[in-house]
Image 1 (tube, rainbow, N blue to C red):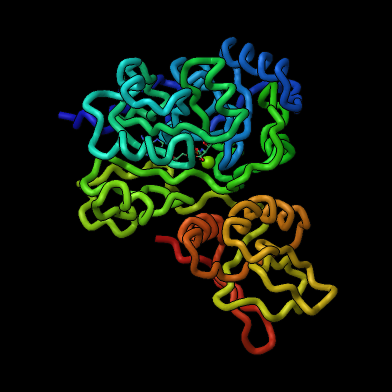
Image 2: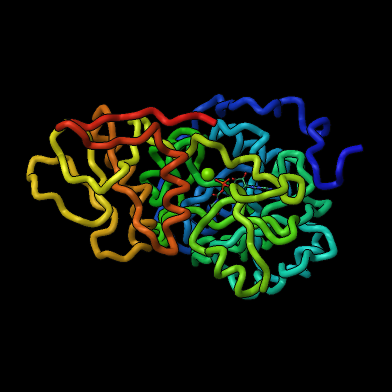
Length: 371
Ligand code: TXA
Ligand code: MG
């Protein structure tokens, strides 16, 4: 018999075969500034079962009413996302008892969940917990678990409060591509596929939330983010596993969306094995902090003020800029150690085509070994 938290693919709609499928017809996409009337319009569109892109503190989300199967299916169509990749449900309130009462998550609340919610919500932490009966299978990709988060962005918070119910929202990019951190990046990704983008300016954090499964003991980080294992451990007073280091695969739920290739620019990205010192080539270079001496170099800077949070904030915007230069390759500096390093290295590894090193007067590019 299937475990109650395991996948029950048989119940997914027949359309949902796991294959990417693009929304077949074009709509006019508008970017609108934040105002009482644009928020009202966004609510009306969502309540009509359609999609709206909106800012969160991490990246822009592509929202649909999370309890409506038909609306949620449109997210997969617009992104070309396989139906096997579950979505995060964004809640209007950090009160987990309310989430249980509304059947968004199932009782009993797992150990530590209340403490973590009190400490980090609203904020960039997503908790994977047992699914409630009201959550459609499309949201969870047929799993018995659901990922919950309360975003800390005034626009997202206002939208959720006005709706009074959860929004399912992945990052507002086409499947596998770079997550958008401003409204123009959302337009680049989804023009013609969604009616409305709420323009709340650039996202303050710039990389996606930490995803933490509370189904394993101890809890397991499925996707690293700005809330680190140390910060979680201070609340849970337990060890916190990272998925890659997990010893027993049976004791933690894997994250089906954590693909080896993701967040990728169209230009191949190479991770340099040592800080970049040579710019003698037509490539685009992304430097962590130090400015180049060579004026003709095609250089982008991640962290001009030396604060590691700035590197995270700039990462996806800078990758997009380098991608738009239509060069044959992008080379990026190694990420130095900091509390942000694990999340930054994780995204860059998935976005990369291989590694680069400077030897014998030239750049040597090596394709990534696939596992
Ligand atoms: O910061 C964020 O988390 C952004 C903003 C918009 O909230 N959202 C986001 O969503 O990054 P998305 O869909 O791009 O990534 C969600 C991740 C995926 O890796 C997915 O597989 C994982 O969360 N996930 C969702 N539900 C899950 C579940 N029930 N079990 C395990 N992993 C789950
Ligand atoms: Mg995403």
